[in-house]
Image (cartoon, rainbow, N blue to C red):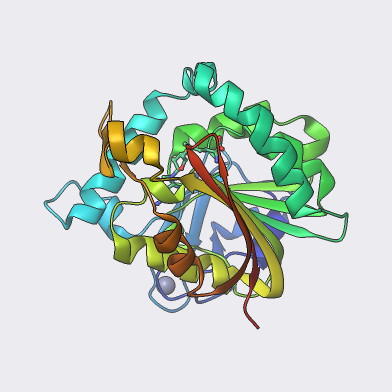
Length: 278
Ligand SMILES: C[S@@+](CC[C@H](N)C(=O)[O-])C[C@H]1O[C@@H](n2cnc3c(N)ncnc32)[C@H](O)[C@@H]1O
Ligand SMILES: [Zn+2]
């Protein structure tokens, strides 16, 4: 973790900032491998492990019986950790990538002035491509293994202007209004309840400045899936998914964004370009 990330971090629960870095001896370091971040308001302690700050809400850290949202999110964390070696080998994903990446680039229209938030960065299918185009990029993902692998895959020059965090999109540990661009590719469908997805959209909206652009993709409940698939269910490993109708997707995004374009990709994804409401 770069020391300057402290300028952007906030408590995932109450959004208080700045977080205090501990032990104090680390306060002279440019990069931090192990340590703690303490919230000045609720006094929660968040670890930094192997250079990754881990700012998760309490319910994701305990094994106790909790609401379905947290049980599904804990499974997501565990299964994504286990799948870091196989994720990019998926043939369908390779085909989607050929269409999704150029569209994402065109819609994001990044410049070296942009602060980019990558919401659900995974092992970095997109990160290494987009981060060089922006001034700074903050990637967040619920899976520690994915974030670690993403960091390992980034070239040294890109690492210098990138930050990766383990966090839940429904509780984003960043100050509000910082970012000029956000990207989220194939993530929203894996957030388990409507309330939790709505909170994630509110949180991405909060992190962005008014007028900032948000480009995203998510599962589409197209005719193909109406006939042969499920609207909601679990992939192998217990990964929750939810397929959105165009109306549902637009309604969800409209909480915080003007939806400027919404198209389908291969009857599988919605692809949307939005602007944060002022
Ligand atoms: C299908 S992968 C997409 C990864 C990457 N965006 C890409 O395009 O390759 C979904 C990612 O969303 C992450 N994810 C799921 N639920 C999340 C949540 N509540 N908060 C943050 N990340 C989440 C998973 O850990 C996983 O890395
Ligand atoms: Zn706090």
